Length: 294
Image (cartoon, rainbow, N blue to C red; front, side):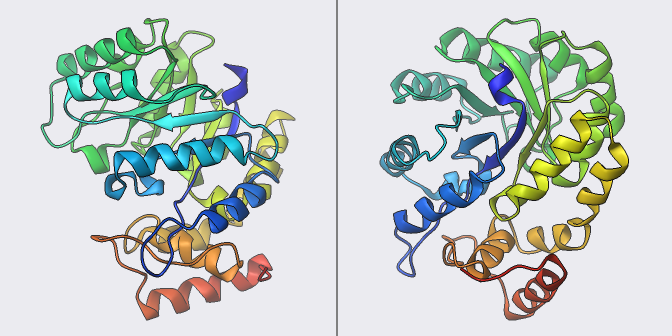
């Protein structure tokens, strides 16, 4: 799956003030991100998938397929903590034109490692498309261990993992023992350069919604073996990364996108628009990045 090397952008879902999907904003976002990303991730956490109906998710996916300016690969998020429901959702999803499925490790019910393995084994058996695992313990309340990831990597349909544990030792264990073609993808924007250095395939990024060209430079320098230059590009995002998540994701990055004239800042409950102090902080941090509106 060389098509999934580099930067995948976890697309936000723009909303109008009345909380309807803003398709004009989404089209602007697709054009903007196409300047530097390698593939689109639709209906990840950053897309507020938890608060979109099934029909809305399909509508967004269909829109991305039809308004894909560079015909980039598409990864679609289908996951959950009810294995049979995830399987059924995959079987019913309109997957024509989709390259892979991103599936989060089961959350809330905190399964054992064997339970996680059996969950993904069943998902892979049902899926007509390759599966990218998603490990994000901060959201799921359980960790997909390196040992379980490597065990799952032996299943042909499972082609990679988005690793957002923040545990570099765990990621290095995967990198050192994984099958050659298994994709180790960073789920933390600030670890992108580090993942490239350990042989990772790239990143699925939140900040690439706003700064696709910075991630393009990180990739280019890394692939050229110039990790000093790669790190310098990475450092540009160091100050702004934290505020992106202070009040939930994608609350912060939507303020940046508003300032860039791409879409409005609205989110759906239980997420709320960034507080005035946070907005002021974020806008101030954009000045060194030379962001111009519109």
